[in-house]
Image (cartoon, rainbow, N blue to C red; front, side, top):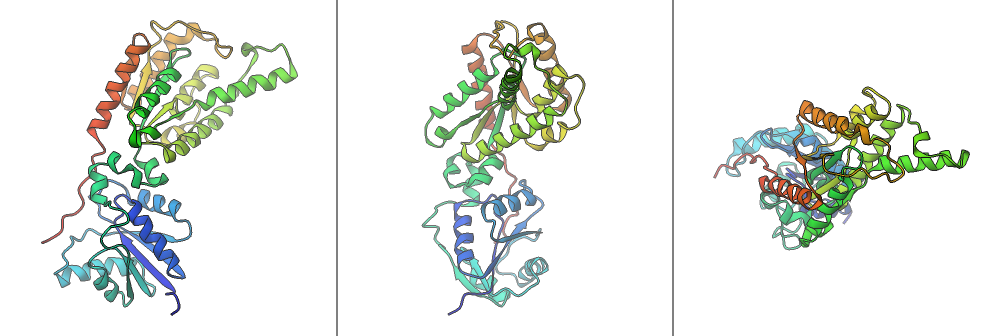
Length: 359
């Protein structure tokens, strides 16, 4: 028997999990070309476009499309079935030869498309997970989430502050603390500051021309900062795909905009899109008070630290970013940071409930 030419997988994918990916991969192997339709209700709190992007990244060989379907589910109502099918067929007007599902209603759905039904792991024996379970406990289901979904759901915590205020220390200490919890937390990552790597290379390049050059001789141009911001975002996104439920970042593109003020002066419009591109759930602002200034060869702004701390606080307030100020010695700062992150985790992800089913 030849493979079906056009297959269809349909679901909410709210959010996508291992069972969904198994279904899609099985379907992709079982037909010549596959369409995945994301059926989104406007009450749901993960945007349809995000779910589509996650699925497309995980399954580059299939076509992923979306449709808004605000019709309640009622498997016993012909009127409701017809309303759903009107949405589905408007989104997928071409012929469907096979419908792949892990649902009890799959046979009826396939019949209404005039297609054969292919059942895949109806009892969820291979991957005992569901969208409901993920929404109720994302961290507990983390092992069933693939990279794009992890990146989309990870709680992101950023340490920012002036020079020599311990931002790297607190970010790395936090990552070590949560890795120590074991389980899915063992994958907790800390994203390094790309601006430092950029600065080190800039100093090395200068020393190749002038062997005696020091950090004070290095000059930055305004066009350097969008490059730094873009690379910082790329590092963060890569780490989020591999990490645990919380991701710690030693600075971000928002902070890069403030550092532009420090080294060049004024705002840089080229940095702003990168600062707005990623969601961050909590900022940890390291106060300069009580922290000795240590010149590690890439610092020269001891006198600017009060101004920098003030600018970070002003920009965090102006942009409405949630933050806490870290004060005191290293142990006290870590304790303050852990308390703030635990509170963030305790609040959870708070997904909106999907449309209820009629029974």
